[in-house]
Length: 94
Image 1 (cartoon, one colour):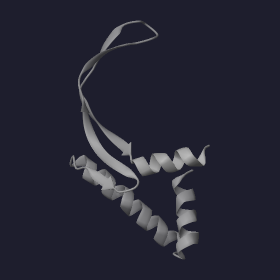
Image 2 (cartoon, rainbow, N blue to C red; image 1 turned 90 degrees about the vertical axis):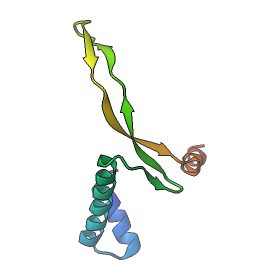
Image 3 (tube, rainbow, N blue to C red; image 1 turned 180 degrees about the horizontal axis):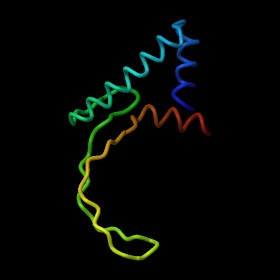
Image 4 (tube, helix red, strand yellow; image 1 turned 45 degrees about the horizontal axis):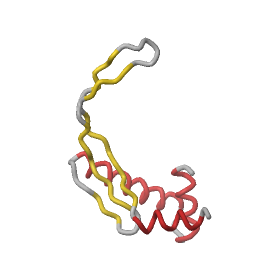
């Protein structure tokens, strides 16, 4: 499913135009990205929590040359899915 598919579904179920719906979806995504850039955690009850996690420096191996490579520490966005979300997905795929 793409962002355009999400916009179409929300637009048809809410009665908003596709342009209005696209602006809302884009605004939501931009807000989440901006908050995570600042290191904030975002909780959406029943969906999950977005947070930024620091990954430590590590040694990896290039599979082609078998050469060791240092991967520097970095911050990565994470999404932890809520129990309700997991349960709903699990029940629908039985």
